Image 1 (cartoon, helix red, strand yellow):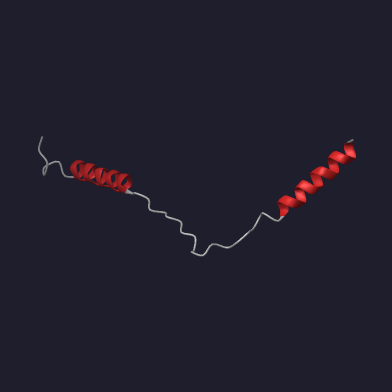
Image 2 (cartoon, one colour):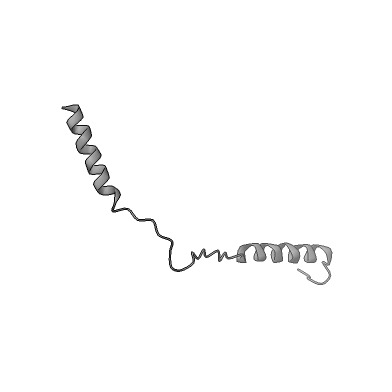
Length: 62
C-alpha cells in the first residue's frame, strides 16, 4: 500500500516537472529607490537658524 502511494506520488511529481519553466525577463529589472529627504533638510535648516539666532541676538530682537 505504501509503495503504491510512493509510485503514484513519483508519477505525479514527474508529470508536474514539465510544467515549470525558468525564463529570464525580456525587460531589465528596475528598482526604484526614490527617497524623500525633505525631513533631513528641514531639520538641518532649523538647527542652522537656531544657531544663527543664538549667536546673533541683536539681529532678531524679541
